[in-house]
Length: 162
Length: 162
Image (cartoon, rainbow over all chains, first blue to last red; front, side):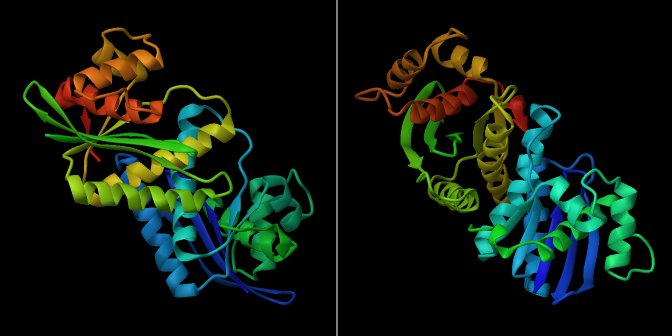
């Protein structure tokens, strides 16, 4: 099963593709999408949608794994997260790819065994689980891969029908 | 100048198209897009994007007028508004249509002369300004038309480059 994990952000979006073969996790692709500070939000959404489309077409994931959102810093940042996260939900729906959502704590437990793990602990465990030469950086990439790993470790019933 | 006003919501979205000819405001089209309660958010975004595309292709607005958002009820509703509002920003950017944003108070002042006007006062004034036989309902439609009227009454410098 191919899983695409996305950690959407308006400055940096992390994307990670893994292949789950039984107990084996294979790193397929990962990258960070960086948006210029002066890029209007609509243009960022277009770029995000196009990029998700490209990754889905290239790697054919069966599912996209996204972090659940419960709390927020302020209205502006929540709206902005809604725009960037919405771009993923939109393109997933457009292409008929189901979206699975996991709380940050679930992701940390799935990857490190500890729900309050630090960013660098997640990075280290992602490196080990995927047999990478070094920890994936920035943490947006390791967070995206951790989301994909979390899906691999979790009941498929967590799939949300889009 | 053709203006498309949009009042995005995940249950009901109001859309209104007017033609501004000097001091004359002409009602071209208005409608409410209703989303079934069980429709996943990704599918609502797809429908919204497709509908905005259809209206832009049909009526060729030079600008889309949207309400500015400053406050919110809670994280969930703010995220949802981000998704639906984002669908408009996305499609506007995709089609190269600039977006103008106005605070609710600005819209009420532009339409009724009073920044704390009630919904029904906005409806009545929209009816009068556009020479409609009866007030546009639901208020999502009159709010969308009011946003378009507000743009017509406001300095074009308010245009935000997407």
